[in-house]
Amino acid sequence: MARYRDSLPQLGGETFLTDGGLETTLIFHEGLELPEFAAFVLLETEEGRRQLRGYLEPYLRIAREKGLGFVLDTPTWRANPDWGAKLGYDAAGLRRINMAAVRELIALRETWETPGAPLVVSGAIGPRGDGYKAGRSGIEEAERYHAPQIAAFAEADADMVGAFTLTGTDEAAGIARAAAAQGMPCSISFTVETDGRLVDGTSLRDAIATVDAETGASPAYYLINCAHPTHFELALEPGEPWMERIRGIRANASAKSHAELDESDSLDIGDPEDLARRYRALRDRLPRLRLLGGCCGTDHRHVRAICEAWLPA
Image (cartoon, rainbow, N blue to C red; front, side, top):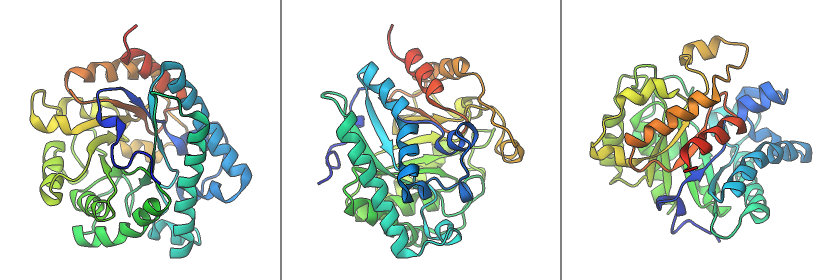
């Protein structure tokens, strides 16, 4: 039975951590090859599962040291039909691997969870297409497309669903509807360009308002991920009600644009201390911000710096 599905602890007032850039860490720091940028293939071997655990454990140590809860996301950002087909996975194979990902994290939770510091297991969903390009699916099509992955997470007893690097409101609304149909709480995370808008020009304000309107405000909360704070901090409007829907930030380490990052063959880890200061400055703009983590280029050093800047001395 899912432990926190009926009452997500990160919806309270406490700070929660999550991890950083899984794929960029494994590729650039660990020297692994991830076909199609897919980390879920590591679940197929004991060595791969060991590498995934080894990636998460430094973050879990920080959370334990600080007495904070943690959101554990499955390595399944690419485990959907379009990307899975490129890697030889049919529907049955994807169901199996998505369920295995949840069960791996449930086992990890049994080792690391402590009283007062819950570990929430979240099934991670990525966009059907490229995370840096506008999606083409309508709401109903997106709901049908993502439903099997969400059903696998639900059956394996994940606490929630987290959709990341979304570039359009239709796909976001479809995922939220599919999650609600399965009785799964979900979070929706948009990525933005250097002007603070989605790739199709939609503002964050309008994106959140649109998804809430299309879904009866079913997402538990929203995040921003895969963008540097300099890209979106000016798009935030202090005092506006929609700002209260944003509870998490998973920023990139680099201030480069998506196009620049796509063309780079090296990892830009930015300045962890500067990134941490920018997170701290976001407290005044985002009154409900509680979930802190990173995205491309970040690792446990960035999350530690963010955590130490955020918490009282």
